[in-house]
Amino acid sequence: MTGKRSVVNDLTQGSVSKQLLRFSYPYALANLMLTGYGTLDMIIVGRFAGSGGIAAMSIGGDLTFFITCICMGFAMAGQIMISQCVGAKNMKTVSKIIGNMYSLLLLCAAAVTVISLSLTENLLMWMNTPDEAWNDTYAFCTLCFSGIVFSFGFNAVSATLRGMGDSKHPMMFTAVSAVINVLLCFLFVAGFRWGGFGAGLAVVTGQGAAFIISIVYLFKHKESFHFDFGLNSFRPDRTILLPLLKMGMPLTLRSGVQIMSNLIINSQVNSFGVTYAAVGGVGQKIGGLQSTFTNTLSESATAMDGQNLGAGKPDRVRRVTLISTGWSAVCILIISAALLLFPARIFGIFTSDPGTLELSHTYVIVLSAMFFGFVTGVGPVAVITAAGDAGMSFAISGFEAVIGRAGLGLLLGRAFGLDALGYWIAMAFSPYMSAIVGWVYYLRGRWETRKLVIDN
Image 1 (cartoon, rainbow, N blue to C red):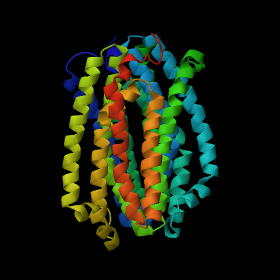
Image 2 (image 1 turned 45 degrees about the horizontal axis):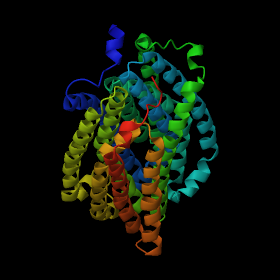
Image 3 (image 1 turned 90 degrees about the horizontal axis):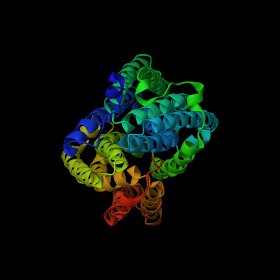
Image 4 (image 1 turned 180 degrees about the horizontal axis):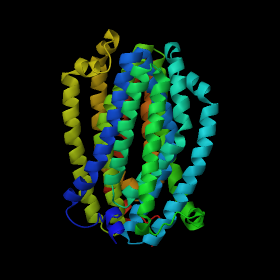
């Protein structure tokens, strides 16, 4: 019983505000650490490898994130299924979900590793990688692609724990990864001058350490969810695997479409030179701070919504929606105010390049507008995802990414001749499109009548 209490956390009882705060603050700390060590890596690389190094990390990070979207989709599907079963007090099914999710992601990791390594040069050409950043970007991507199994594995374990209401331990494992990453990045890049190779090696080593520690923790607490880690536990179960695929594929496509549209925007912006690529790279790191809060609250709300939908408590879901949206708005207001007041100083943390600092005054306006767009969709998107309506989630994201971000970006950037500014305007406007559709869906109440992903 002690192991069970330390892993499974009931999010269907007590104050919604307190539960959301308790669950989200470790999640926020984990995301802050991810953003923090990514930012520190960028600062180290920028100071010791210049704008070319920044561009390499930006482009390489985009590609790596795009590839890991496969893991993110199926891991999120598994988390939703686990949270619904935990809410319905069906722990035996939780064990089956874990085994099927891990088997699926292991196969995906193997396939994606082989494909990505064989297509690295093609991907860099497609991204319009500047010549001066090519070698660092290639080295960074090669190492990160080689360590995909660690990223997939850690995300799977984190999804398992968060679905059971435990956000504290994933945060601790992330802290281990962050410390190792930053220390090694400083050693490899600043000390050994290994550039993109050193940055990539630091990332993979940190991820590998986090994955190993998280698996050990899960193994020690396996009695909590009746999972013995034997070979039979990983055997495919049609009643679990089919719902996992049915929900995971649209969520994977959702992530893929979103990231692909970002890659299209970034590749077009990169074509205007290394200065624009560097501005985008720094902007992404600043955007990571925004994501720390909006994604934390959205994904925390998703976990709470999943358990409460499984327990048949729609009123608590409504409370979660309003509170998470309100808290997100306050956080983004503070971040945007700082950006608009001190753009050059904030960008100056990463680089001293005059061209990059000059462009920062324009780019922070784009970032602030985009941030508030994300805030408006936090609550309803969480409900749609937690309800298991992956098709609607994909449709909304596809509408935003294809029509809003990529389509409008190409129209303004190329057809209207606004160049990089046109693509940035599209980035700022597109989140409002998905937020409007999401609120319409939420207010119609379809999520209340949907069946659980797995009937209990």
